[in-house]
Length: 85
Image (cartoon, rainbow, N blue to C red; front, side):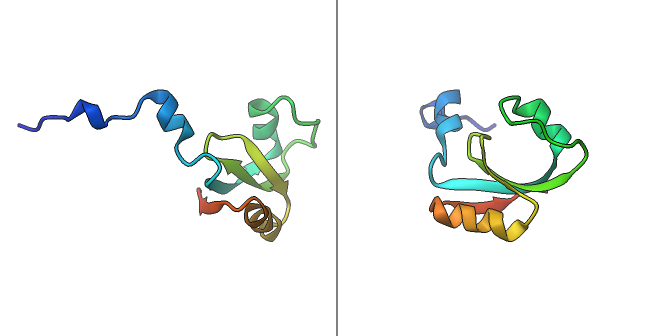
């Protein structure tokens, strides 16, 4: 039987802040998905596939049709990147 040491668990807020300002993730997204998830973005033509760099908390940082531009954006923000598929 395993026991859990509860004093080492992260709260939801601590988990949400994990990697903030240090880690970002990149993945391909369709403009339809961005319009739904981020209504503050300007209107975009539906169905276009873009590369996106997101902060650890899921906020978009860079959008581009070129993967290399997203990597440059990560470097400019001094962020480590991971790629999600």
